Length: 430
Image (tube, rainbow, N blue to C red; front, side, top):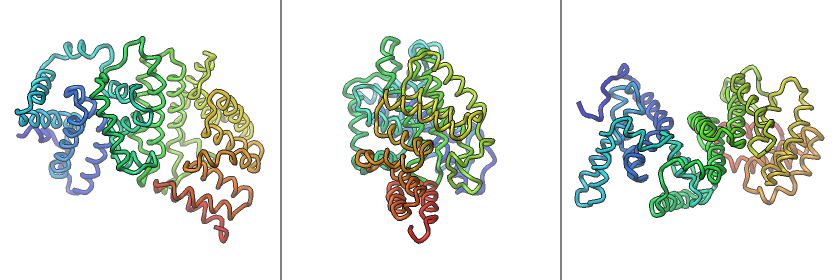
């Protein structure tokens, strides 16, 4: 039997389209793990990506006929490794490639104890890859884009839409980032303990943005990409284990838990989007809420507030059922006031404006949003928020114009359907 073939199979599926869908789900869930493992073996990002893509092409051919293997991720990694070795051996005219092939074979021959000694105290390939992607030699936008590509498995077109740039532009950015990693000799490892404080901010920002892409997917039919949310949560946990005394790492984990806890309530039975104020709290994950609140309290005791800790406290306040709705929003507004003093950004100011509208009415919110219209002109949440405030202020024609702008900036089908319903609710003014 070929090394590429599954040795144990589930019952062979008769529905090839369903099997193809399962294979694509495996791609989404396992791509980052497989690429990270191959990069450690090969020391070459492009070759690792090509090998994993080759393996998934084989899977698309074989799995619909033979069924999924018991451990699809391990099957992909093994197949990709074999494909990479074959490719390197064929390029015998290139000594560097021949050496890579021999190094790969030597790596697979080492014992677990030898590999552990080589890897150091942290053996998580994806965390190593995340630190590589978030190296300070790379621009912040390149760090996020590369993480979404290599760990999230997003295609270049998807990342381009998330960044609101042409696909060709994003392709060039990714190529330049990978070339810089190669040419600058950026190491594929977790930094030493003394280096961690200087590297943590980029890591936190990147994990947060990966989660955001999963929480509201930039494209597609589904509102949430659970694989990206789960990966961001996993990486946040690993980072807290690595740096338990870093308050912002703990704050980020708390924020992701408290946000993720609402996932089941964000859509109705028909898949439609449900705003926070209309969600059924019984559908929230109360174990995640309890864990998140415990982390928030631990952060508060440290007395060193930061942006992620404050956002986590905001999400904890939203779920505090011991407070009235009005009191919750008063608390949220106070937290955004604090965040605006610590990290004054237009997005924070927009969040504060929304909270202000809940406390003092839509007119106050609109006044606070007004100076943000220019700096956030291409930011979809600004137009969606302003449309909602205008609707509540009975300024229907202006609200309709803002809903249309928000729709132009929205590629996710679930979000679009929600905005279209709001636009339609304006009747003749829409």
